[in-house]
Length: 103
Ligand code: FES
Picture: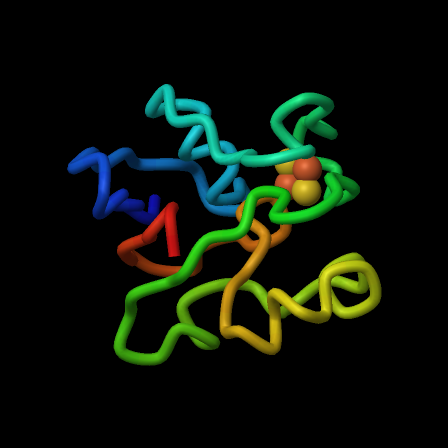
């Protein structure tokens, strides 16, 4: 079970394989959505607008530490990917990693 550490909140939680960083944040009581997305969150479906549930990953090889980008990230949230951020609800950790929630 990978451990997800939230750097800004100083919280670490363990989640079952296959669950996403969004699940880890929910388990830790952390709200990820900001801006418009906070008013009407999609509850982990990848359809929030604006900043959605963007996070920055801290790991030696971030691409290898989580699942690859989903079509929702590649099509609907290209700008986030370009800025090396991921949607928390679309990436599942494969190993322990640290997440920055306010990049
Ligand atoms: S929770 Fe809506 S995009 Fe992630």
